[in-house]
Image (cartoon, rainbow over all chains, first blue to last red; front, side, top):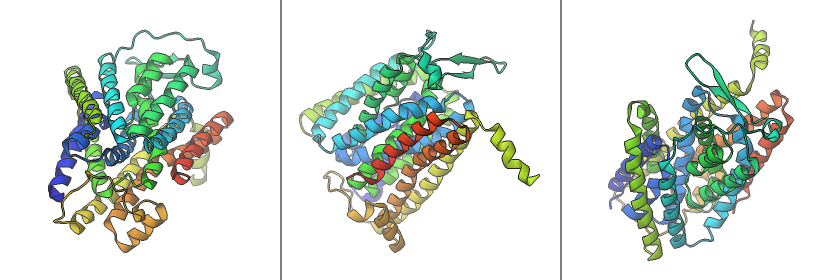
Length: 280
Length: 133
């Protein structure tokens, strides 16, 4: 394919990946990597490198908007980033030792899991009134805006050790596959540690960028980040996700999310099959 | 008036204010990085016009676009690939700056525990950045 055509198509594809990722809250990388490897026949390693860069761009680009809402908790984020960054460095080292076929299969499995997780995403409600003394000792208890009159609801954090361990896993997946693994991060905070959903998603966004930055240096120095591929991917995903965040309020997300979950299942199966047959 | 300002800021400094500054920091960083990447990308398209895309086979990118010092040398030469990579490096540096800022901010809040936690995160990030290989 001529370079100009290729670059334009990759930009467009990345744009839609970023847009969908922002609208569904699952991030662009989960569709981006299948698009690059299955659609454009890009080597898995280049795809992972470019995707990881786009993850940092998306997370940082959305940060200011998230901060304004006043939900994110900088202490919870920083504490758990210890686990995610160590995991990310571990994942990036692992990535150079695992054959790309196996990476494709693992990626497919992760896609199927994220599709499954996205079904019950905005289920909040059952907030556990946790009484974990470490929540206050680690300064992680907080409050978030709730209700129309500027009222604030307080919350505490529970099962910190389990959440921390799962965050290490989320970091490893991020470093291994070049994704943000936001779904796993939200799972750890919302479902395990009992942190309110809105606080979990916004805090997760901050963590994604820091986590990806931990493995990006390793990818850069290993030569996985190809400038010709990374530039349309990064700019496309960034533009798409910024637009997605803008139109998010005016769109019915539930139907979109169902369609997106089905797409993830299809892509997941295709990645597993292609990885198994050694075509990736 | 002017010398009053920093003191007032220090008094009003809390987690919420820290996060607002962090958000702005990330936004500026990503915009700066995107601008450099865009400029490098356009130059890359001009320099490689008429070539065919081939990312099917992995051949690690040339060494001059893999390390910060080499990227700067490449940028000075006007090498488009090096400029793109420099923009990407700026992007990677953005969340790292955020953690550096957190170290300072928690120090201002006199929160020793979180200064230590932020320093630990920073150490891992710097390890990934420089000791990687």
